[in-house]
Structures are given as structure tokens and as C-alpha cells.
Amino acid sequence: MRNERVASAYREKQQQICFELASADGSAIFETDHWEKEIGHGYTMVLENGDAIEKAAVNFSAVGGQVSERMRQALSIQDGEEYFATGISSIIHPRNVHVPITHMNVRFFQLSSGKAWFGGGIDLTPHYVNKKEASWFHLQLKKVCDQFDMEFYRDYKKWADDYFYLPHRDETRGVGGIFFDHQDGTSEANFEKFFAFTQALAEAYPKIYVELLNNNRKKEISDDERQWQLLRRGRYVEFNLLYDRGTKFGLESNGRTESIFLSMPPLASWTYDYQPDEGSKEEETLRLLKKEIDWIHNI
Image (cartoon, rainbow, N blue to C red; front, side):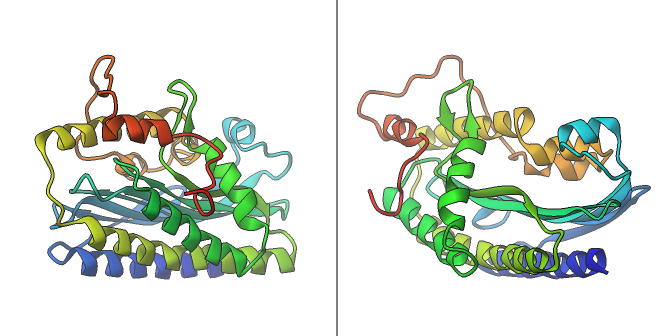
């Protein structure tokens, strides 16, 4: 069955991601929590207090049940009384302020009506925007996208710009990446295409991040830079609590609370009416947190 095939593949990818990240950190391992609820089960894998990674989480779940009215409205479901959903969601909060935060998610959703779709994406949230690294990051995503459709990167990059955005701050969460949702997986051809695409993204995710991690993990940081890191983490919390669809779906579907909130950083802060110094690298970062930047060609 499709459901079992996708869930099995995603579970394998979760283990692969954890292995690569733990190997890169070098001093910490992922603890595994296998949970079960009436709607299904999952594996929550968490690494904490590593040498380079302060906190990383890689969630896998396979759940299903009756489509509630709140789910129907939240996900624009027109038909189908029962659902099945499986996916991987990962977040990494590094120790060093010069290493970015990153997030990855791939997911498959199927209704009893037969309708199915895929969603997912990868995005990067630097505490300080490094233009060259942002450009390299987007190029890596484009290479993965181009293997499956030459329009994927263009379309999904714009989608990410619009999705990973805090309208109350008028700033993007970071330098974006790619994001897609409700990509039709009903037909056999579309199912195979997006199934392969989401697996390719999950495979690329740790490799891309380890490169950025190793480039920056040993850089010196000041107390002021650490405080800036905590402020930027605060923005991350704001997005996840106010706008993130995965968080909302998890809560609407009676998901496991501890796993849903694993994306939160271990420490974050908010300073009233913070204003960066004119000409500072903090001000430069805020200036670059905008939509529609062509990171590959115009940097």
C-alpha cells in the first residue's frame, strides 16, 4: 500500500538524517522516544547539548483517523471522511551564532476518497545573513529541484518567501528556501514523482547543513552576538506559534504535544523595541530579511 510504502521510506530517512547530524556534531547522540496514541505512532529523536548543535529534533509520525470539522477547514478538505498522514519534520538550533538555524519537512496526506498530496520544504534562518552562504544554499536546493522539474525551484522559492514571513514584523523568517503544499499525488505518475522528490530533499538536508555547520562552528562569538542570537530565536518562536501549518495541524489532529513543540529553541529572548545600531551587521541582516531576493544571481 502507498501509506505503508511512504511511511517506511520516511522512517528510514529520519534515521539517516540523525546519523549524519550526530556524526557531524561529534559529541552527542539522538535519544529516541517511540510514542503511540489512538491516532497512530511516531519516533521523536532529539539531540541536546552537543559540541556544535545546541538542540536538534527529527520527528517521524504516521497517523490517521476521522477528519474533524476543524481539520476540514484548516486543510481545505472537500471530501473524504478519514485521513492518513505521514512525514518527517526537523529543526536544528546551533550553538554558534554564525551557524544558521534550519528546518526541513516532507509529508504525505491521503484521504479515504482517494485524493492524496505531498508537501514540504527546506528553509534557512541565519542569525547573521551571509550572502555567499545564502546563495550557495539556494543553489543546492535548485539542483535538487531541477532533477524533477525545472520550474520547481522558481515556484517553490516564491512560495517559501510568502510562507516564511512574519507580517506583523514585515520581515521574512530568514533567507527562505523552498516550500510547497497540496501537490497532487493522486495519480500514479504524480505520486511517484513527488515521493521521489521528497525523499531527495530529505537526503540533501543534512548534507547541506553539515557544510554550513563546519564552515562556522569554531568562530569566536561575543556576548552581544549571543544576545542577538537569542533575539532572532524569539522571532523563530513567533512564526512557529502564529503561522506554522505543521504546528497547527499537529494541534488540530490531537497530535503529541511534546513532539509538536520540539521546534522551539532551548533559549530565546525578547527585548522591548530593540533597535540595531546604524551601520551594524544586525541592521544589515534586518535589511536582508525581505521577500523576492534572487539569492543565486544577484548576490
